[in-house]
Length: 446
Image (cartoon, rainbow, N blue to C red; front, side, top):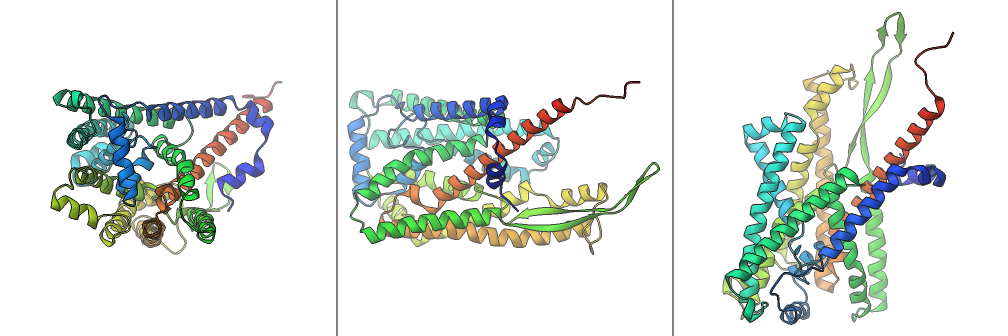
């Protein structure tokens, strides 16, 4: 089956694209929002000493890098510049994880989720409240570590700096959340994913420059390029993989007409959760590691902080194990949220569809769940391998995080999703044009 990108390439008509005013407006709006996001990464927090901050990051890089580089890539360089969006969209993602977990545990929230659009809006509102709370807590912790680490001008240190930092970070994160929602509603693609995508892409030039100026041999550089190309190929191949369940529809009579039975397929992706598991797992691990990295810079830091940072450092077994476990957990967790076998079986039963050899209803739901669980096992293992093995190699060879498995997974998935949405908008425009040309009428003229 051709992917959305292949269909778009084969069916692309530039004259039709030029006439698709709605699509052009959406693309222009998306690009404008992403430009605004990039400008926000250069708006610094008040009271920061830029020289002390630069020295701190240089010290971290001279020590072989740290988890701060990972957070910095996700934020598009905002952390290194200590901008108002230094926390990026991670507090919103963490709040979303908490709300989804609570939805599965709380009957009241589960009932609210089933209320449709109204329930979804309430849950989204609670997620926003949680984002504000998490950003305020993380912002206060970041303000304390910046202040005690000597990265704040002496005249600006104190309660006023802490309050201004918290307010600025909360405002920046809420602005990013709003921009992401606007892209999803009025632009092209998933807004939150596109913001993370833009941050990673913005750091690619610096990553390539770091590779070019490093002591890496020509053979190692060529191997890195070949590995990156191979990684992209594997990601695209697996993301397109599907398991199709045959669905049959019996003959039916409507009035005096008899309609023949039909067959179709229920496509189940090998990786139903997409890019969400590594993002969720990263957001859980990165924030405490970021605070620990800042704390360890203060005169060596407490012994337990240094031990914690060392155990969860890049390429360390404990970090890789926790990261892989988080990816596998969220792969199953998010798949259970986005795909409900019981609802799918009920919809098939209502429309007369059935899986050959399987009774409609409960048996069909059990069969779909049986297939889905096994697909998710393979998909979760694939995600864990794609994200952890490059992390291990990256730590051993000082490869920038922007060239790691998680970054490539996010970039490829977001690109494929955006291309699919552009393709759907183009098809919708072509159908509208056909309907207008056909000049359909309600009845014949006599």
